Structures are given as structure tokens and as C-alpha cells.
Amino acid sequence: MRGPQILVVNPTVPAKTVPEFIAYAKANPGKLNFASPGNGTSFHVAGEMFKMVAGVNMIHVPYRGGGPAVADLIGGQVQVMFTGPADSVGYIRAGKLRALAVTRATRSEILPDIPTVSEFLPGFETSQWFGLGAPKGTPAEIVDKLNKAVNTALADSMIKVRLADLGGTAIPGSPGDFGKLIADETEKWAKVIRAANIKPE
Image (cartoon, rainbow, N blue to C red; front, side, top):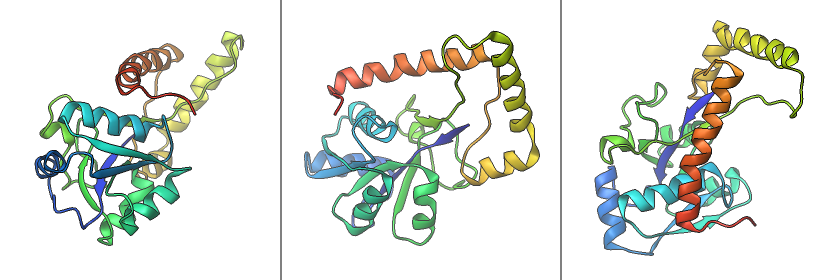
């Protein structure tokens, strides 16, 4: 499954669009705190990539999980966060958070009126994805059997609806396809991690 991330801010932040947010961040360098569920998480590195591409200076505040980070974002202790639909859509619809953009290359079905970051920063794309792996050395016939079972499940209409409710889409494929995805994502994010000097805790 692949799902979007959402750039959200506390409603006290005056920006209502990505360009307004970038302008506000540039006018207030180092004064905006961006939360994440933890150092090195996909939401953290998305924020670091945004900082690099947009040319803004925000302070990263790592939390021990998404719940505490979102709670402090709503409370105003931090001002901005990249997060997932499950953690934020209810708060966005209730007006407790303001969504500025989604990070996929295309708009999200669950927030169709929210633009993508790439509409303002061409080429910017991040997402969260999930897959099923097996220990190294697992016999090929077992891997193939698991792969067929997973692809069959992902083709089920009820599964597709449930994934869509979470803002995600199925990404069926072969073990080779998944291996390529992992390799491509590792290369992409390794560059960001090195540039941002992110170290393991």
C-alpha cells in the first residue's frame, strides 16, 4: 500500500497555501518548529526534504510517536508537521488543523480539494508505503506463494475500499517489483538523510 503524507499546520499559522507558508517561514527563519513521530521517520525526512527544496529553516522536534506529535501540533507547541491521513483527516475536517498540501504526485481522493506540494515545488513527492517481506533465504516457491496470496487480497474490492478510506492505494506486483521499490526509495532518502545529517538515536 502507498499513501500520501499531508503538510498540516496549526491554525494560528497565517499561511493558507504552500507559497504563503514558504514566505512566512523565510520571514521567520528558525522560529517554526516542525514535529515528527521520531528521528528518521518518513515524516521527519519529508520535512527535511521540504526544507531543502523550499529553502526554509525550520527546527525539527522529534516525538515518541505520532499521537503526542499531533497533540502538540493541535495545542500550538509546534507549528507544522508532515503526517498521514489516519492521524490528521479528522482534525482537518474539524478545523483543528489546516492542510496545506498532500505530498503525492497527484491529489488524494480523501482530500480532493487540497493541492499537492508539487503544484508549487515541481518534482516534490513523498509518500508512506507498506509491504510484506520474508527472511533472507526463504525458498522461492514460498515467496511466490505469498506474493500471489497478497496480490489476490489487494485485488479484493473490500480491501481496496478499506485502503482508500485510509488514503492509500494498493501497489500489487512481483517480488522483483518490490525489491526495485525498496532500492529506489533507499537511494532517494539516503541523499536526504546525508544532506540533513540525520543520525540514529
